[in-house]
Every structure is written in structure tokens, then in C-alpha cells.
Length: 157
Image 1 (cartoon, rainbow, N blue to C red):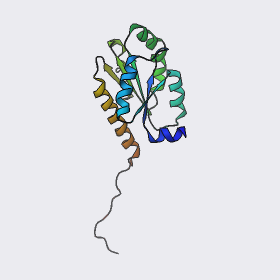
Image 2 (image 1 turned 180 degrees about the vertical axis):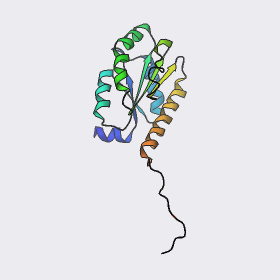
Image 3 (image 1 turned 60 degrees about the horizontal axis):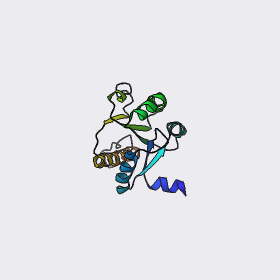
Image 4 (image 1 turned 90 degrees about the horizontal axis):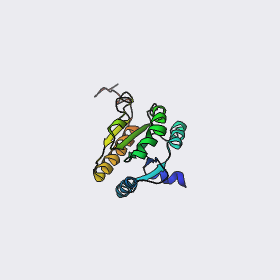
């Protein structure tokens, strides 16, 4: 039954950086629920296992770094594992932060699946952008990569 729920409703992973969930999780969760998207908290090592299993076509992960303690945890735990996780093209990672030093866009430029979002953010606009991103990724998976087959009009044999 759990597989049926996740097949019908899209979800986004929220990478946690501590024991407690930040306030940004609850605000973003409220916005995404309005659009029918589930926000699931997950640790970075659990996310790495899920991405490597390949059980899903595409994963979307979000993290929020708002305090110095979260900044320290991000540098110690997440940044090193992120190098390996982003090598797979089936994950998109959104990093919301008030620390400019966490802008790893230059490091992950070639992967094109790392997005840095600087605080302050409009949570309503962010929720709408994430929902639109999910729609675009699902259309990309459903679209045939080869295009249309060529044909000759008015050919009679």
C-alpha cells in the first residue's frame, strides 16, 4: 500500500541537518501540501542509499542551512557525500542557505542538478517552483526520446 501512495502522489525529500526539523521545513511542507506534494524528512546517508538503489526515476532533495550550527553539520556531513550523490543524474538538489560559501554551483557545474537558493526566500514562490519542477521532470520521463517517425504523404502502392 505504501508504494501505491508514493506512485500517485509526488514527494520531495528534505535533508535534515540535526535532530530537530527547522521552521523552514514546516513552512515549505504547508506550501507543498496545497499542491498535493509530500515533503519527507531524510538523513543524507539514507538519501544516498535510496539514490544508489535506483528505485525511482528521479529524486528531488531540498536542504536548509540557516544557522551556524547547521552550516557546520552541512560542511562535515553533507558536502562530502553530496559529491557522490550528485554524480547520478537522477537527483536534483536544492540548497537553501544564507551562507554564500555554501554555493557549490561552481563545483557541481557540470552535473546541472545542483541549485543554490539564497535566503531570504519567498516560500510560496519556492513551493510553486518546486511543483513546476516536478511537473517538468515527469513530462521529461514520459516523453519519447526519439521524436516522430518520418513518413511520406500520399504514397500509394
